[in-house]
Image 1 (cartoon, rainbow, N blue to C red):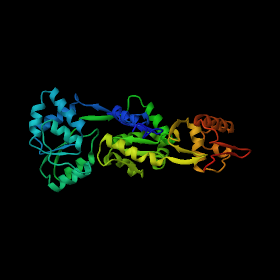
Image 2: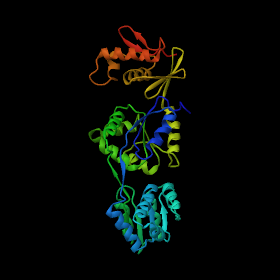
Image 3: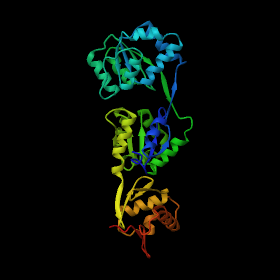
Image 4: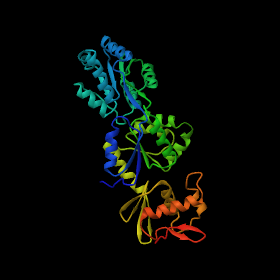
Length: 362
């Protein structure tokens, strides 16, 4: 298990539970670039949350939409601070409770409440369709929001004849330090990470918004060389709308997300037989006869170019195009020298006099 992801660089955009996800990836050998796209700001002292809670106590809801585990726990904890936890639990115990996913269901049941239904897709659209089919005319619905308002969901329920109380428990805010996110955006656009993980749809939106003029380059990289790994279909939806192929586990769990990446990333690596050796190219490293050889970006770029046409000679001018702008042919020679030093095996990168370099494939 320790080397399943060795040589791969993976971006992590999560804030909450980022340490847990990072640890799971690093235990499998990955190099992690941590760059939270958003942070959660609780609203325990917010007047809107208190007003929504009071509205539920004054007019008990017929239906409760529990969207997130952290949101439900935060709502009940805030009510506890106001001395309203027991009255709120009592009111909600008589409502028809819909949990959008397993985390929301866990929070509901931990509070001593019982949910009646949960969608297989964990999507708000399926929840709305279920309630519309069940019939909501004349009913009062408490909708626990997850980070931001959901005007389209509220409008759909109101058009079906319901009255909706929106319960804002927390909000999404930009990261305190945006520098790591902008660095990750540059790495994605430059195809210097192998994968990026997303654990919420707002994080996807925040990363693309932060990309600004680099958005097209980021999306192009995610459509081709950089794997987009999402914890579930709801998280994946914004990327799929942009035509990005996404991998996601069947169950929305961090452990399942990591196992999905273990299944998906290694088969994407390129392997060639070179001078009697097996050479496998991963994100920031080569694996030579089973041994990891970490490489800097420039020698790795040269190795990738040579491996793309194994056995054929590539000129210095062709290899120069794989290096950052502003490099010259001397930089190619330096990159080749560092590549040979990093591989630590003579004869893997051959010089063809006055023509360039090649990998002598078997």
